[in-house]
Amino acid sequence: MPYIRVPKLSGSHPLELDNAVQVRLFWQINSVACFNVLGGRVAGGFVNSQTHADDLTAAVLAVYATSGLGARQSTNTLLLGVGIRDVRTRNLVEYFNTNTGTAGTGSAEPLPNQLAAVVTLRTEFAGKSYRGRLYFSGADEDQNTSQGLIEGAYNTALVAFVTAVSGAMADEGITLSVLSAPRYANLTPPLDIQTWPGAITPVVAGGILTRDTQWDTQRRRKS
Image 1 (spheres, rainbow, N blue to C red):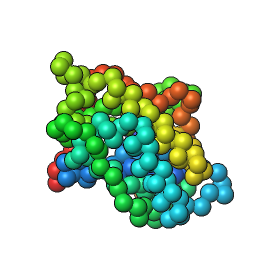
Image 2 (cartoon, helix red, strand yellow):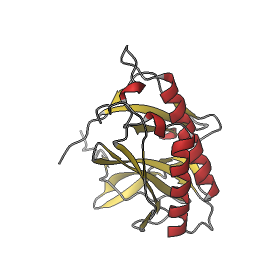
Image 3 (cartoon, one colour):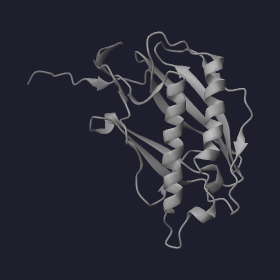
Image 4 (cartoon, rainbow, N blue to C red):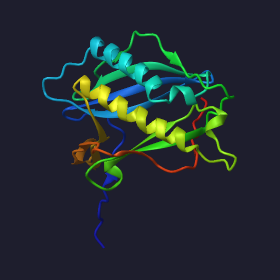
C-alpha cells in the first residue's frame, strides 16, 4: 500500500484579516484583571489612533451607566476602558485609553468571578465561524434568582450595554462583527498553506441577545 501523507493542522498564526480590528473592553472584577474581545470591520481609510481609543472609551463608560448594567454589577467590578488593535497587518500596536474607569454601583455582594452571563452575537450566516459569544462576570447577588438563575433584568441590561457599545464603535467607524481567523495546513513543511482565508461578518440588526437564563462557568488557569 502506498504511503499517503495526511496534512497536519498548522500551529498558531497572528490574526491578520483585511479591514478588521479588535476592540477589547478591560475590566477588573474582585481585583482580577480580565477583558472581552469584540471584532470590528473598518473601511480601507480607517486609521487607528489614541483618539479613537479615548473617544470610544468615553462613550463605553457612559453607556455602562445608561444601559443599566453598572447598577446591576458589584462595586468590586470596574470597567477600566477600551483598547483597539488594527489586525489588517500583523503585530500592530494596540491603543489603550487614557481615561479613568468607572465602578459598578450594585449594593449587594459580588458573585464569584467564574459565574458569567453570556451574550450571543448573530450574523446573517449559521455555523461556529459566524457566531460570537461574550462572557460577562461581575454581577452582584441581586442578579441571581432564588432558583439560581439570571434575573431577566440583568440579561436585558447586558443586551442594552452591548447594543450601545456597538453604536459607539460605529461612531468611530467600526462595525461590530464576528472575526474568524484564517486556517492553515502544514502541507509542505516547513511552509504553511492557507486553506481558508477567514471571515469578517457584521452582526445583524437584532443579533445581540442573551443566550439563556442559566449562568455559565468560566475556567482559567491562574498561572
